[in-house]
Image (cartoon, rainbow, N blue to C red):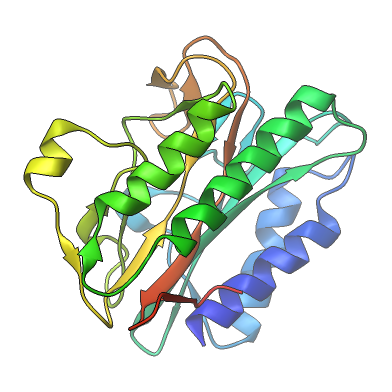
Length: 236
């Protein structure tokens, strides 16, 4: 149920995220919806985060704080939602094109979503976690983009962030400690990709992560559970 409420909240976000709408309005509407369904917007207060969802625009990668800023045509908006329901948590994100966006921005969003789809297809019980990371990295880099290194996907269940970490790229340290995914393991897979270089920095509000070169970034995420033959998406 946590996954369904999360998915439905993101569907609502798609409907209301339009030109001249503020990110504060989107936050408030999604918060009201989550609570109306018996859910808890778990981001609010998490490690001090002040709002119920994250809204990251254009060069903002993740953890953007909703506020009075209004969306304009040509923006790409990443929305990240986490919901608690009866002691279980689900987490998902998507990137929405606002109005008419440049072809390059549209392609970035499409590649990010495709990389998540390929990562989910790569999952199988008793297979290595690195297959997920490799699927994302190869898809993104083949298309000429870069993968954020400083933030990763994660295990999820009764807590927002659990083991294992789920990087969006393959590294020596990942391969040395590669985990085997067993049936029933629940993870949040979330490619964060950049049109330019992968380097990021945090703004003075101590939350919003932006690309250092201020080029566009996109973000998609699903919570999935590993099954014998693949994975079930819980946030759809």
